[in-house]
Every structure is written in structure tokens, then in C-alpha cells.
Amino acid sequence: MTTTEHQNWGVEALWQELEPLLPGLSIEVLARAESTNTALLERVKSEGRHPGERGAYGRRAHDMQPCLLVAEHQTHGRGRMGRSWHAVPGASLTFSLAMPLDLADWSGLSLTVGCAIAEALEPSGNAAPRLQLKWPNDIWLDGRKLGGILIETVPAGGQRMAVIGIGLNVGHRPSDAAEAQFLTGFASLDELEQDLTPPEVLRRIAGPLIRAVTSFGQTGFGAWASAYARRDLLQGREIYAGALEGLGRGVNTQGELLLQTAEGMQTISGGEVSIRLTAPPPVQD
Image (cartoon, rainbow, N blue to C red; front, side, top):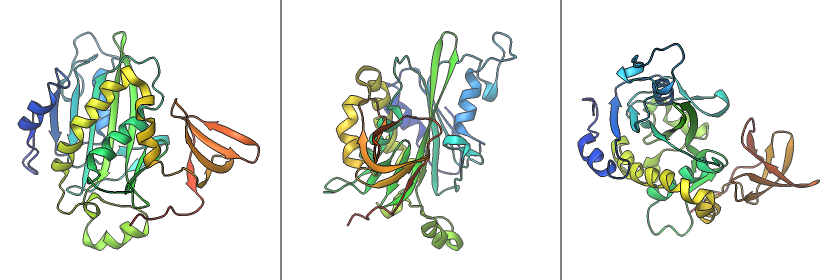
């Protein structure tokens, strides 16, 4: 376990809380990294290496031990379809969780992860959720994007390692860009609860995230379907999905998007699909 002097991440206490949930877990906090997903994926890739040869950050190829890697400043974060994710040091939480998963069906995992994070952060007593989920991997707050999820997998030694990347806006950006944040449609968690810090947000969501991913192997997306429906940003809204246009009708048991078009119900799976709202979603009171 390693940490930095920039923020107090409470790594030892966090590890003591999480390791029983995910035996063998290590937690690392880097002051700076290009991409936590890329760093963890590199650790288990073996192209061009000899057995036992060490790769990035001193880890061996085919390293299948679970790891939670945090970057205080992520310089080249990635989203779906090659998009960039821009993180502001001190105002963002960027981390990845790598763990071996043996799944017959990965469908709906990103939706499950989104539900677990939203439920861990939503203040109790909210009649209508302010945190909503935009299929397939975005988390929104009051009608603006709060963060995203990027899940990647890599084979190693007859197994498969899943790397789950999370990026969340925690505080407002620097004052000279604060107004631009709202104009460009971004939200931050301090609008939901003041004085939150990236280490506190990590402490709140890490346990629920591990439990959700672990249980997904036994239950699949079905156990989370109702929780997702409650936070479904696209339900009943006019949206575009690639060349298709219609009303969002939730998701099926595999976590695929259902779109009611003039030609009938269409099923949208993952891949190169971009969802655009035809009108801004309503803001919850």
C-alpha cells in the first residue's frame, strides 16, 4: 500500500475495511497517472514479456491480484468510444478497480456499477433521486453529467481480469472556470453535499462497488433492474440512438436499451452507440 502527501486518503483504514470483501486487495494512490485503467490493464498484459518479467509499477505480467488504483491527477483519462475524460486535481475522483471475474454474461455490469455508486452517494430521504443514470455508463446529477464508468477486460493466464474505471466531479473547478462548468453541462458532488472531498467519496463508494461487482457474478443485472429503473434518465424521453429516434422504454434483463420507434420496439446493445437527449431532462426539486 502506498499513498501521497497531497491528500489524506486514509489508505490503511480503507484497506482494513475492503480487504475482507476482496481478499488479496492492494490499494495504491498515485500523485499523477495518465490513466488508471491503462495502468492496471498493462499489468496483466504479457505481449513481448518473458515469464516473471515485471511490467508497469513493478507488477508482474499476468498479475491477477485485485487492486484499487487512485490517481490524484489523471492526465489522459478515457471514456467510451475513445473520448477523453478531463479530471481536475483536488476536484475530481479518478480510480480503477481491477479484479478477476469469471462471467458467462457481462451484460448490464456498467449499469450495476452505476446503481451501486448512486445509491451510496444519494442522501437518505430524497423522495425522487437527484442522481440518475444515463445508459450505458454515465452518472448525472440534476440533469447534468457528474461522472462516468469505463469497464475493460483483458485475458491473462486462462482467466479474465476486469478493470472498472470511475471518474467523478467532486468539487467545482477553479473559479475562473466555475461558470463554464455549468454552461457545458457538468455537475459536481458538492452540489449534492457540501465539503465532500475525493478521499471521502472513495470511502463511501468503494465497499458498495466491490459488493455489487462480486454479487453480479451470481445474480447478473436482474437483481439491480428495479434500482436502475428508479434512476433511468432516458425512461419516457425522446432520444436518438445512432440513426434511430424514439422514446426510451427502459432496459431489458440483459441491460440493453429499449427504444420505441415508429417502426416498433428496438433493442440497443453496447458498442458504438451515442445517446443524445432531444430536450434537457427535468431538474428534481
